[in-house]
Image (tube, rainbow, N blue to C red; front, side, top):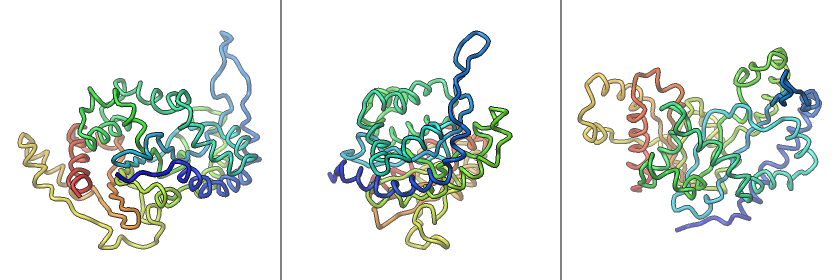
Length: 319
C-alpha cells in the first residue's frame, strides 16, 4: 500500500496556499475590519452569536487518517456557509504567513478535540436528523460503499473512516444569501461580499491540492465543476480524460425499478453523471449534482447513493 508522508504533504500544502492567503488578506483587510466581532446580548442577557460576523473562505481539510488510508478519497461539495470568521481569519493568517497556513491544517488534524468539534461531531451528530438528501449522508454513504461497510450501522462507529478523506469545496466562498442574508445589516452590504468573493477565487482550483495528495477517488457533488478547476487546463474535456460506465449491470441489480424510474435514471444519471481519469495523479473523478438538487428529480436517495457507489466500484475499486 502506498502511503503519503504527512510532513511532506503539510509543507506542500503550506507552499501552495501561503502566498495566496497573504494576498487574500491584503485584498480584504479593510473590509474585515468592518466585521470585527461585537459583544452583544439579547433581551434575556444571552450572547448573540455571530453578530456583525462575515464568513471566511473555506480551505480544504485533509483528514488525519488520509495519509495511510488504503484508498485515498477526496469529497468535494459546492460551498460551506458560515465557515469560520473573516476578521479572525485575517487577524491570524495575515501575520503568520506559511506558519499560519500550516497551523490551519495541523491545528485541525493534529488536535483530536479540535478535530471532533469542527468535523466529526459537528457533522456526525446531524446524520440522523438531516434529510435523506443531506450532503453528509451522501458523504457517509460514499465512504461506506468504497470500504464495503454498512452505512447506517457501521460508518459512525468507524472514526478511522470519518477521518480518512479530504473534505473540500469547488467554491471556497459561499454565494450571497447562503448566510449573509440572514442578517439584515449584512444583506445590505452586498458590495463587501462581492469583493471578498472575488478575492477568494484564487483558492478555487483543485490543482492547489491534487498534485501532492494524489487521491485515488474524488467525488464532486456539484455540476458547476469545470475542467479548468479540476485540471488547470482550458478547453473541452479530452477523450482520454472521460471514461464510460456500463450501467446495464446496475439495472440488473435493481430489478424492482419501474420503467418510469429507469427512464429518469437514464436521463439524469447515464447522461449527466460524469466521470474522468487524471493520469497525472492516478485519480478517478466522479461528478454529480449536489444532494440538495436531487429530490427535484423524483428519484429516491437510496437509488442515487446506489448509483454513485456503483459508478465508483465499477471502475475505481476494480481497476
